[in-house]
Image (cartoon, rainbow, N blue to C red):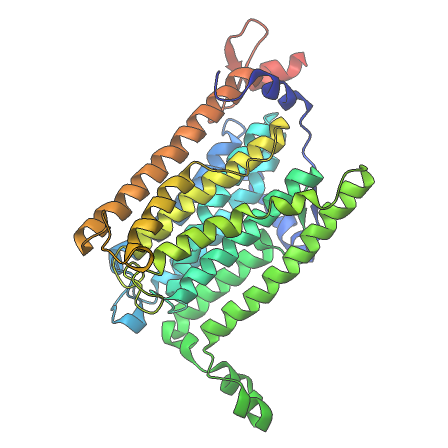
Length: 419
């Protein structure tokens, strides 16, 4: 132990999972299916193994994308792959991920392994999946290398950040009638299925024409051409605005009921737009319309690095929630992105060429170095945090074992009987 302060570790024993899920889809359709599905897993399988297995399904989907379109051109950019049937596998992989993500908690209760470690591990995998699905879904929507994909990344990360921020200040995970982990994932599954049947070009059709709204002269005259894919992003923006309002209402009620200031939490929403602004500023070099990174094969590695930095950021928030530590408003990985953004924009800021990213080759090296450092930083955090929690609580991460009273690792069932 050493990464997490001793006094913070002691708060783990006060942990009690609190969650609210108002989704009718979950209640009447998915939950009965999840309850049935978990019975197929032997009780010697650790819940975190199920969670990780689900993430591996998404990583497999991501691998097929890189195999068929390594430069992320999408069909609109001239890519000839992946074949349509691959999108069926993306839909299946994401649905399996959602199913496994939902039953890991049920498996934890079946095996007596429920606790704060499972919640942190679950959220960490969800954070990684967020960016991977942005990349996959944007490709399926035929957005490819575009600012629309960047907008999708920001909106998706913002929704995840809001949920994490809300849980930190209310002490419970709140999923409304429409939520990302349930209905949001099912919508993306539907996108993959539609793309598998009709192809990515389907999403380029004019939303106004396809919806029949062009029959109204005012709309036909004043509303610009908007593809189905772009319209989807616009609606997602409205969804984000709604989630911001509902999340703050929940935080406001919680703070007032506990006789605490309701405005302070708003300050800790700032880390997300600040970090997003840094990434956008980096991408806007040499200009917004001629982004060197977006219009290159390095766009996906950049997004992956961004996603890993985000996963590091929100995982630290979850850890702070579990251990009752102050909200982590600063993340050290920002330093690297700030350097990249300032260096790339030196022609704009100082009227001189970049020192590091002075050529396409050096830009590629810097982006891939950012990806490597982001991965290592997040891997280090996960390793240290998991080791501290497992040693302190005496509960294993990937096996169904606990420490007995003598400090020896034994089958969890034996310890559960003693409690």
